[in-house]
Length: 247
Image (cartoon, rainbow, N blue to C red; front, side, top):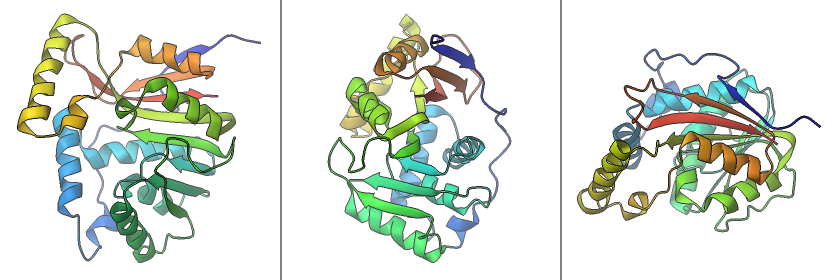
């Protein structure tokens, strides 16, 4: 059996052009609520990227896998799941989980408004272990969510829910362990905890590229693809990256 492989790049190059119009959001009666605006602002502050353009890039990658059974590991306001469900090129079904009932109901309302309820199903889950059987999904997606969880427990659950040859798609910050970057993150942690009053994010645990690859191989994945979604200005800069691991 061949050993694990690490591959640089993705199935296609990412488009760094400005985001396309988002009709599914602009046509909603309530528009984007303040919570989602806050999510987008925080994402840009933390990553330097546009939230919606980045979601669209991740949707492109998932579509290119040509897999039809997708689990969204954090529904939030349903931005990723509804974008994917609304693409004509996606021929499958999405199961999107969250513990927040209010966010789930908002996402369900949006799905009904867009007539996408036959494509995406929003489910509540309070447990670390998702209420699906082993090998349920072909793709599992985590967007800026991995850093909030114990890594080994999170990855073990991802391996459990994925079918053989399934893909885990992690969109996360990869943080070099250099002294300048440690100092930068210490300052951001201070801002998160005391200025932005966001202690949960302040306690987030981030890994560098090699650490994350080692964790993925240790969990049982056999191939890893890594692609930075932003060009680094220095070797000390943390980069929001798309990491795709194949079971």
